Length: 163
Image (tube, rainbow, N blue to C red; front, side, top):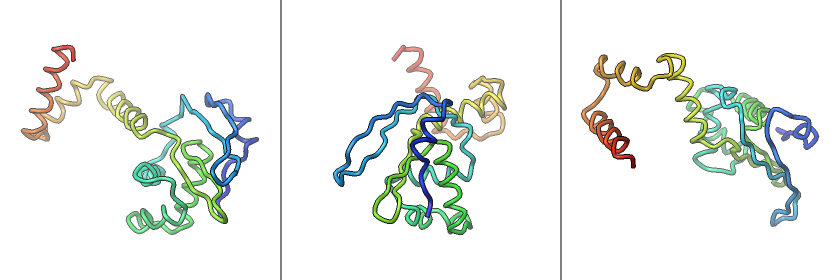
C-alpha cells in the first residue's frame, strides 16, 4: 500500500509556499489543507503526467482506480503506477487521504498551470521564447488547418481590439 507523505515531511519542505490548516472531514478524520503557489511543474515527468491526467479527469481516485484507467494503455504493471503515485506525492503534485484500508488521491497541481508551464518551456527551448516563431514553424511545414488559421485570425483581432 502506498503511504502519503507524513506531516513532518511537509513541514520540512521549504521549496514550496504551503500553508496548512487542520480540518475535519465528514468522517471526522483530520486532513491537511494546503495551498501551493509555486509548484515545480517541470519536475512532473511524462509518465507522471499520465497519472495526473487521470486525476484531472476525475478525483479523488484510489490506486486501483488509477491503475484501471492507465496501466493497460501504457503497458504498465500496477507497481509502476504505484511508484508514479509515490513520486507525485513526494513532489507534492498530488495529495492522499486515507479511506479505510486504501488511499484516495487528488491533484494539488492545477492542470491549466501545468499546461501553461509546459507550453512556455517548449516555446522557450525550441523557439527562443517567441510564439510567432512557433506559428511560423507550423505554417511553413503546412501543419495549420484552415480552422487553425481562422482561430489565429480571431485571436489576433481580439488582441487588437483589446478584449
